[in-house]
Image 1 (tube, rainbow, N blue to C red):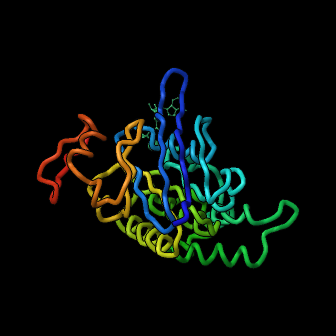
Image 2 (tube, rainbow, N blue to C red; image 1 turned 135 degrees about the vertical axis):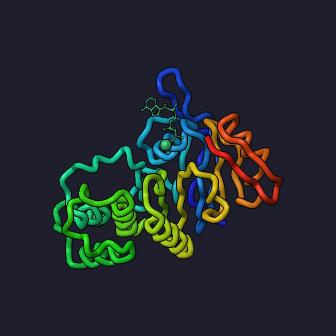
Length: 250
Ligand code: ADP
Ligand code: MG
């Protein structure tokens, strides 16, 4: 099976603090993968390091190439708090940004690009909001627009950082269903996720981290009390047994 992504001994230092410690893993095509771990575990930093947005040591190979050579094929939805929601931009323009990797700098967006924008907005149920300012929308609607931007890019590999934080149930359902669709098309989706209650339902595989990699594998093999307590250390309390885990969060 061809690997979509290979990460070898990835480390990130912020001055004296090592946020990501020597992480290595390889993922295959067509998987929906949750990146879980407590606050400050380095989840966001790991994604940014993989994408080349944060200075890192180690080696990352995406689709058999260096990240910089396959940037068009990678879509990234940052954590909500990293986006300036007051920036004056229309919903349809945010989604068109997903097309920019495909449009040469000397050309305008074409009819085909606009069609893709409309189709992507339809998929997230936000077409009627296309002429609205992004800042006027609710948290869930804003997140759906960012998912539409990611869809419009027609990427092969997706990274979403805590897409379900601060959004309504309907938006969460729309987004998880779309992510499943994308996975079913053979693409690989990484989702940073902090709430453990849904991980069994949402993901095929889990990458559990706390600065270092604690475990990576099929959900049924790694969603286990001992692995969870090793990942979350004192920040969660677990009840139940291997088959029926109850978690009381941070
Ligand atoms: P998570 O996403 O798992 O909550 P982060 O990747 O945001 O964790 O952060 C990991 C660690 O790195 C934390 O201790 C955080 O304070 C630190 N950190 C994150 N970004 C920066 C930065 N730009 N400069 C310095 N320290 C940072
Ligand atoms: Mg984070």
